Amino acid sequence: MLNHFPHPDLTPTLSPKETAECVRSEIARAFPRTTFEIVLRETKPPVLTLRWWDGPARSVVDTALEDFRSRKWDWHKDADGELYSEEWREAHTVVEASGLLGYRMYFDMTFDLDRHFTLPTLTQAAKRIAEQHGVEMPQIRDSIAELLAEYGSTPDTEHLRASLGKFYEIDDGGVSIGGVPLQTVILNDLEFLPFL
Image (cartoon, rainbow, N blue to C red; front, side):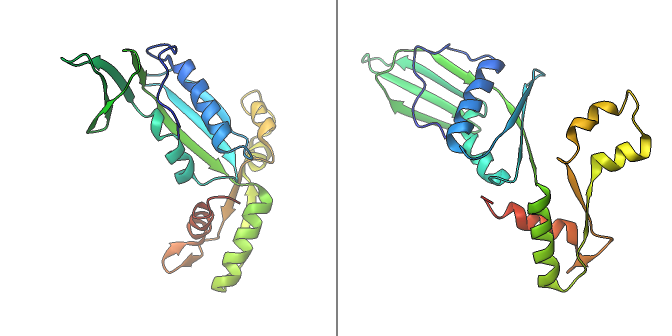
């Protein structure tokens, strides 16, 4: 999370690109051992996709991004000349005393958190869960490789080749544990482990 109030030397209203750079810097500081792919789509509102493998849980990254969700600081002088700020986030209004100069900083960003798992991590978790519940080990497939094998190398599919060995799926063959698909049990178990 941001560990300081915005400084008045910053641009009063941050553009999507400037906000994305702030996010990139904060994420690198918060999770130095994880590499994130960060892609900005300048829609209305802008969408910033953060993609990573293994590493922190979605909930942990989501918490680290809290300061970047539609957050706005307005600095004003009251009747006595004292500076104060009003901060809006969702339905909350906070008033704080401050000596900063008056200015506005505004983030308006939607986040798409896209966590994936490497083959060793998925295999280890699937094996552990299968043994724990006495079910057959599910098959783990490279979904991009199967797509290319099915449709062949065409202009429409060739761009997917760079993603080989990155995106895996769990094929649980319809096996359930307590009515919950085995694939869901495994992925939920991985998500509850913040750092792998």
